[in-house]
Amino acid sequence: MMLVYRQSIVQLRGSCQAAKALLERLDLEKVELQAQKEHKEYILERYKPTVSHEMMLMVLRKGEERVQIENPIVKLGASDAEKIATIMREADPEYWGTITNQQIVEGMSGVNWLGIKVNGELVSVGNTRLTEWGGLIGVVATHEIQRNKGYATSIVSELVKQILEKMPIAMIYVLSDNPPAIRVYRKVGFKPYRTYFFMERGERR
Image (tube, rainbow, N blue to C red):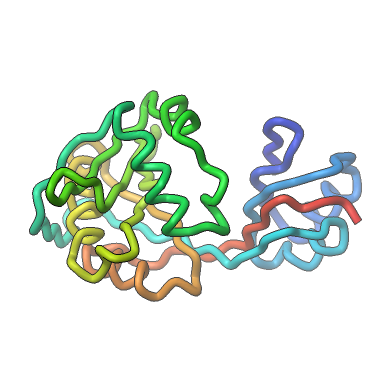
């Protein structure tokens, strides 16, 4: 299975033989994709990535959650978009470095944004989107000088609580080499499920 969106592969699944055959028949100049780890060598034979990572999918099933909300959580809207974008860019310049407040506003439909404010200033944010099989947490970011205060744990806990009120499972993707984030997610009850190869802005060799 290969999912193509806006002239770019975004997901590649299947056996190694199938993945290799699909890639050989593909005529795209650029890709940005998530694939099974065993597909990595075939992808890199055809595309040269600007950024690549190993990404872990973590899951939390209803009844396994350990909700820990120690800070007041507020719902965010379009008026918070500029602050959300600033926190995201600062939190991960490599991945979110070009995100704009306009992109945040345009992507708010169907997305639940939550945040923590200290003295009126937004310091930590998170969002989730419900799918037909579960809730996917897409963003968790905290201002650098406000980290290690439990804000991310509170945000993730509230997102999980809201997801599990409607769905049987919560999911989150995290870079495998990001131990602080993984610790937060484990603390709330997430468990590693599967790892993937992730590639951004790959150009054909």
